[in-house]
Length: 525
Image (tube, rainbow, N blue to C red):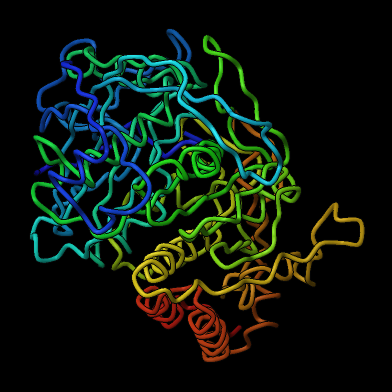
């Protein structure tokens, strides 16, 4: 791959049929989970790697007809490569290969066998069946020996009307330096067929490449997600990982996808032997509907907790902005044997790393640690009235990946985190003298601050309300806090080392943060 590309421009907030029984899959291609009590998911038909695409109808987003139209080829996207909102550099630079596969089969919907309760301990049964054709995107180490045995499967976020991979953006540097494989799954109708705020589904983005795709509706999304993961974990026929042996599989999803993943964990995961752990990232108080029109509508109760009777670990990773903007404060739950809730101070539901920095971050640039102030959440589509949040979510998300993988591999549970501090009536945060939230996961962004970072609602176009705010300190305040450059370095070192010791920043990222403190010029008059 020799290309620079922008699949969708930003990371927004967003066949022949073969249905095989699980036991057959285990007998023919067993993995570390084979022989256990639960059945396997059905295997889809896999086609690929997919090539081709482009043409006159490719890659054009009409935001305002005749006024604002975007051709993603002008923004670096190369027809003939997978289309999604993700990284804009060639992953081959970091020793990775990207491929795309179509998956097809018959997916099932689900109905509850009993009342759905707020504790998330649900039982379901298969209901309707429908044919589908969807796709997965695969990132794997080019060198087989670099693979660490763990696969992260991301539920593409479709809120913006385009398949987006926010968790790949947040975590890709950790994934690639540690040898994970990553799978992006087009599980939902909007990403394939259309809908959402910015109308850029696969079949519109590149009709020549994706016209064969067909999605029957989101009631079937859960089983499509399972079958996509099954195609990777226990392949039959074409192997999307080209022979890599999967030892661990981690499900992940952010925002809207976190709501889907919560329902998946509560309802579907207990019925199949597939995933070893999950990271639910930036969910609201509710989970997604179990079934919806045109199938029987089955909403879920709110608030919805993550079931606590699992033997597979789950980390709930929440931004400060999620608690009140999305209402996740109502879905707070205590840590348990296989559950951890991480709430990070100074973070927003989406931020400058997701839509600006992360797409270019190769993991070796200390300046990524700079706190920037920009109104451009995702130019030219999202222009906000106040500078958007540029907080530490990405550092903590990488630590969450490392923690869940270690938990699965060794049984060493992820660290427990204090909750963000709330006022007496639980309606707002307790903030320090600089306006930063107290409690929660602590990082140098709030313990050696250069700005006030919040997840609070702000004004602007479209989804700006989710982007929080950054207010850089004035020079006089910085000089008071850090009278010398060494004072700033010492403050960063102390806060960063504390975060590493607590398990919320990985050591290699800590070195980048500390290196930048020494070259930033901050500190002193």
